[in-house]
Length: 377
Image (cartoon, rainbow, N blue to C red; front, side):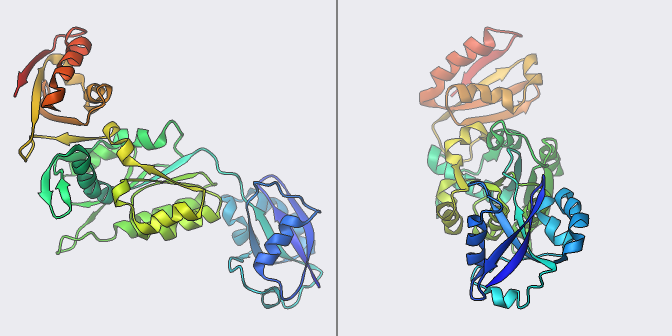
């Protein structure tokens, strides 16, 4: 039997223990013995990483404070103790520690902080928008026929309201990251999104019209955030399986992960993550799309939509959020067209038109500044 001297590291204190191992034991066996040791009792919810270090005993006091206070904490063992994380569970102890000098610490046990309630949001805007056109076309039975079913070309996203939906009252842990591609080439659109405090990255498509680099760019942003922040909630608004390798390290470092996307378009690879780990939760956008998405402009297809014309000086102060109050109260998918600063058209399926007129008269026309309303069918 070999005795491995272990350096236990948390954000609040350090400690030392010894773990007896056999040369044929694996890293997985070592982890089990760490959990079962009686010299330093771990809480049931504690998650930890295991590192190979080569720290002289005489340097323990000098390094203890540095490794405990290093920011980001999850890199402290690597940066302060030159540690090598032991992640291959079947690797044998005798291969890693052929000689265990009693004057050195051989293993660092880094107990990870519990996840906080701060949300770090990453949006693949192209993925969200393209799949949304089909998801909502199908859901609302609106749009033009395509090989994939109904496609709603007029589908739009209000990114400020999307942010509110996925945050669900939780604080932001960092600036939300959104990656999209041209077209649309209108910088006004991207600048408008930046007003909601997004970090926006816009990439050009190649000559074949295919996206270039959206997944790697967003993946790099995820990796950078996980490595530089304490564990929190990673919120991925995307459904591409290429993001799977980026959310797995987050789980390893004790993050919670939420994937928000269209249920009909989520990749099998991400679905596997939900079933493999209870720290990964899926949130269906089909359950919430009326809160952040809408149709914009004159429908390009034959439909049973009719519209109400609203005009008045009060409308000058309105934004989409104010208009959405009507659709949200009626539990309807919003559709609108801004004509000018004082005039907006609101579209409704004909069977819902009378309910909409009643709500508008009761809540807008008969209250506050003068607003005129008339129907165009």
